Image (cartoon, rainbow, N blue to C red; front, side, top):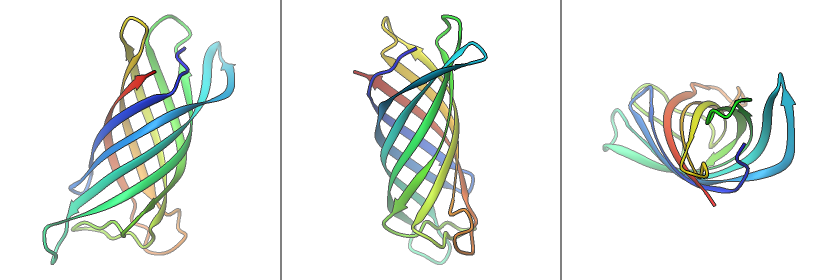
Length: 159
């Protein structure tokens, strides 16, 4: 079970022609437990990203900056296998409203929830690779609330 800060780079594609590039850091929390014999740890995920999507009746793609903070639970395999699963729900704020050909967000503040499957590599498990599915929406704070789903690939380096 690896618990140290990371720096990461992540890229993603949205269901509606959107793209994202994100850099961030994970910071371990001083909390852990065991569920069904598997270790469970927690960390904060702080990210800064750039999203863009092709828009109708507009000039090409529009970039927006997105800042996020998410508490995350990570479930580690009880054996020595390097696999893990994680889930988190956090808050995100952007400098513009996200929009693409099919939808337009109504708020610059949104929630992001994700599920990820990851794998540690390296002699000391200092590298991790993760495939994530993440949904962003405003939880019906304001209508419309179309939401957006991303599939993301993340590389993180422990230090």
